[in-house]
Length: 163
Image 1: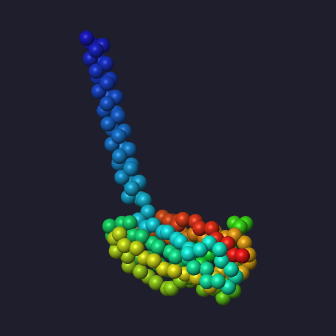
Image 2: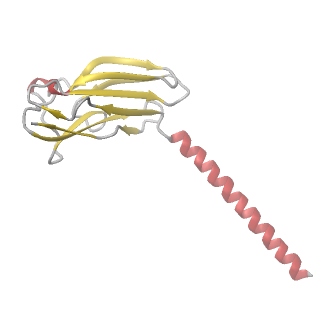
Image 3: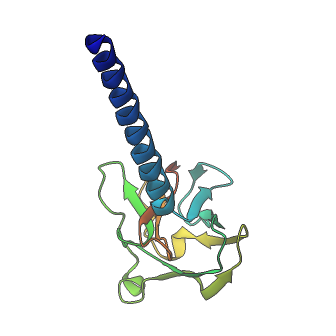
């Protein structure tokens, strides 16, 4: 009998331990959810083949996934920390135009309040900031800092070429 009671006790302890582990994991998942980015960034281009002198149009959308108002800031060029990044086929940053090396703003200047579940969109001409006259393959993506979690959020990556 004593052995049977001990077995029951071990089973109870195992169930109690399993319950504690489940609760801890659930709490961890909630913490991870709280730290998940509260913005999403998507980019698109109307075409993937461009020619020197073309307006290389990039469409940027930022979505507020949170239940709070957030402030978005303008995009910057060539800034791996926060902004629009264009790389050539060798993985090097595409060269900025000479007049852009001092003024790294791209697109219109803005400081935009974005209400919960809303999105902000803008179109920019990459050829006004980058020297895209050299034929070749390029990639572009956008990196933004989430204003709530302060995490870096990267958009999808697009490939395009200049012929």
